[in-house]
Length: 98
Image (cartoon, rainbow, N blue to C red; front, side, top):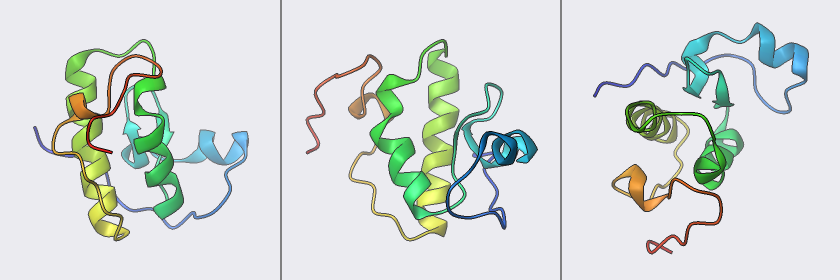
């Protein structure tokens, strides 16, 4: 699956208004507009909260993981995981990669 993520000029803290104005291409889960990734901190947050995202399919998780990898490469964030299943799919799923 190919990433849909694209860099965006908005960085730092995002208000609700900022999030509404972001293009879908900056979200890990673009169709649901969940987990914006506009800088390295947001990429780390998307990784950390991946297993807390609810109401998404495995196909959406596949895309989100590809988007996370693309954003991580752009912002020089190291990702230890090689598959989204290592991040978990339910809240508080143990992560064997850490």
